[in-house]
Length: 285
Ligand SMILES: NC(=O)c1ccc[n+]([C@@H]2O[C@H](COP(=O)([O-])OP(=O)(O)OC[C@H]3O[C@@H](n4cnc5c(N)ncnc54)[C@H](OP(=O)(O)O)[C@@H]3O)[C@@H](O)[C@H]2O)c1
Image 1 (cartoon, rainbow, N blue to C red):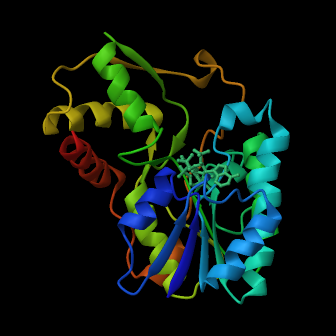
Image 2: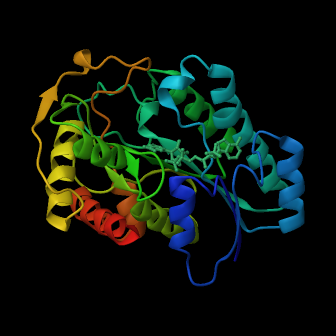
C-alpha cells in the first residue's frame, strides 16, 4: 500500500508516521518537500509516486492569524485541497483529508453529527469547510478537534511551559470540546482509511471538557509523571475575559457514532491519552 502524506512535519503528520500500518509504504512530504498550494507540483509528485492513498495533514492552522490573512487560509485550506483531490483522482488514489469542529457554530448543545448544519464562525472554519467541498464526495474526510501531540505547537505544551513559568493561570471555562491526542487520531485515520470509509467521519478521543478542565488535568497528570514539580492555582474565566481575533464555538463536541460503527470501539478517554502523551514528553526529555 503506497501512501503519500502531505504536511508530514506537523503534529498529525508526525503521528501518522509513528503509527504506520504494517503494509504501508509511505512517502512523507513536509511543506519544504511539497507546497500543496502549487497545483503543478502536487500533480507531478502524485504522477511520480502513483500512491493508493493521499493523506493530507497539511493545513493553515493559525486560527487567529487567518482573520487578517484570509487569502492564504483559503489558498491552503480550500484551493490546495482541490489540487490534491484532482491529482488523487487522476491516478485512482483515495484522498484522506482532515477537517475541524470549527465548521460548526457551537450553538447546538448536543454533539454534532457528520450531517449537522455547518456554520463556521471565522475564516479558519470557513476555509476548512471550503476544503471539505473541494475534497469531493469520493474522499474520506475526518473532522477532529483540540489536537495535541508531544511535538509541535499545542495547548498541552503551552500549558506545561506557562505552568513552569507563572505563579497562577486563568483559562477559559465556557468552551466545551474534546481534547484529542494526535497519535490516537492517527490510529483512527489509518483504520478508517484502510476500512475503505468515504464521506465525512468524526474522530476525537472520548469524553468532554472545557479548556479549564483540560488545563487542570494537564497540571495534575504532569505532576504525577514528574514533568512539573509544583502546583500553581488555575482559575476559570469566561471567553469574554480572553478576547481573540477569531470567534470560537462554545460547544463543539463531535458525535462519533458512525466512526465507532466502523472502528468497532470508541477512542480512549481524553484523560487516558493525555497521560500517555505526557509519559512520551517525559521520555523525550
Ligand atoms: N490542531 C488542532 O487542534 C486541530 C483541530 C481540528 C482540526 N485540525 C486539523 O488537523 C489537521 C492537522 O493539524 P495539525 O494540528 O497537525 O497542524 P500543524 O501541526 O499546524 O501542521 C500543519 C502542517 O501543515 C504544513 N503546511 C502549511 N502550509 C502548507 C503548504 N502550503 N504545503 C504543505 N504543507 C503545509 C505546515 O508546515 P510548516 O509548519 O512548515 O508551515 C505543518 O507542518 C489540519 O487539517 C487541521 O486543520 C487540527
